[in-house]
Image 1 (cartoon, rainbow, N blue to C red):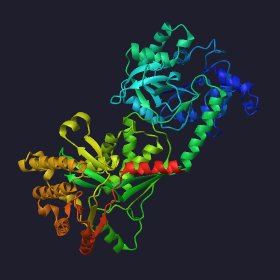
Image 2 (image 1 turned 90 degrees about the vertical axis):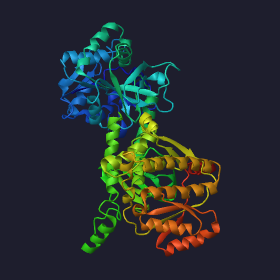
Image 3 (image 1 turned 90 degrees about the horizontal axis):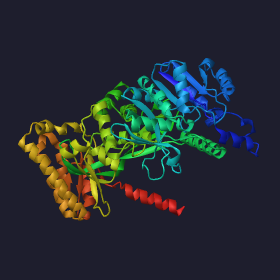
Length: 627
């Protein structure tokens, strides 16, 4: 490919204001082209772009297009930055009035250099918040699409859409369905702004001369008008890739714009590198339905704040994943110590979850047309979720890691909506790590709180995900949780049920229908605050599961905990794949005695503290108001 940097504009506003500035702060910048003004960290704006595209494995040549008025400035810059001076193309213009126009400048390079390759075009005088994004990812996305590529970003608050070329993008195909150059208010609802950062196929280059022949006026020879013509009239295939960061210094800007955004981005960059990002995801308990929810059924689950996974991300020079001292041991007291730990906990800790999430995140963004910055980071995690008791500990680590990555790279809910996020977390486990899992855990950890989930086949086929409803958590009755202190691998509880269901075995198919019916009844009981009915349904849920999975599959440890709870009149069921039980006891006077009985039986017992995201937000809001 060929890269072309455009710096042939005549920035008269900024140049004039710098020349007329009375403070004396900017006298040394008088007559300096906009692209050679200091950017973030004192580097010239053009330096960032040159560093990004100076990659022989991507570009066979890089050209710079300037004007006669500023040619000597760029010639001096080229000799100081190892840029080939012979690759500077001079368009001959000296004023704003006699400039050729951006499209004509590009066409001049193509014609004069006899270019016959795909090209990347970038305005070298833009300033980007995170200038070091991964251009190889951009090229890879372009090559995967049968058309041209436009880079766009979401306008920040205060930016007017009338100052930019606005694109409307199909979220499924990433095809740009409409391009509107500096639209008037109300012409489009889109806030996605195009910048001069394009990838153009070699077969499309000839369209430029056709366009120019229709545009005698220089003011119409802009890329905005070119893309309007290509997309709206020629109906060329043009795709969009989002860069999750802002652009500034586009077009005619003044000194106040330059100083404001320079200060803004410099402080923003400094803040990102100094402040760690810490995110938590919580364990969950399944209150109703079949936790093995790959049966197009319905479930109700709740996040609990007793147990959590926490991930911390800090910007760093190299990308580093830090092993957890307990969960990813690399040092042992002896060979016997290694043997005992490996026998009890296996070989796989949380480090593989971090690595798989990062790998899948990059792959997802590349496929979804999101260009990431080339920022490195260090990831570490901590968790207190007990292992092998079916409380969704693995997915909690993945979920927390994903939250950190989204914050770090400025990925929004629009880029990665909650239903898609749950699918993403599941794919990390099933596709990357070959863990047998379903959607329930990931959905409730993404939505948080008390969530009703409908995974009916019709919904999954039509929209790629189920219907997920957050339920009111006020006035919930007290739930309790008990789990085996030394559980065996809970994965065996899934048995061969799924295969029997796929085979259409009547008993299993009817059982899955009954789980869904119980879930709908439980939803009504929760909405009506009918806790006696909810307790009855929880018991029915367990008995149904017991009948279809059998006692041999459930295992003696789980059955022992269920029997013990029932001795105290508590409703009880399995909250996950095994190793733990969740209960609802309406007679609170028996709670202390029941706790002691579980502890004497060698189980860990705790009263559940539900995690209510809306309550947390209310408390944060109240604290901010108080301050």
